[in-house]
Image: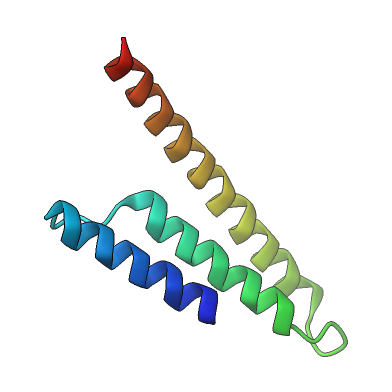
Length: 83
């Protein structure tokens, strides 16, 4: 929970510093991934059904793919600017 709050605070500071009204997608996806990891940590495996675990794993996989795609897109944009 502390990591999620710190990441959210960092996102707000970046938005304030750059004076952008749009929160970066990568930061939002990272916050969502941190929340999912927190959910996995506090999960009781003996009380949780396999379908819930599978749904959480699928959500983590989807968010990971989005995070990778957004990060990949950002690095391509930076390479274009450097040339």
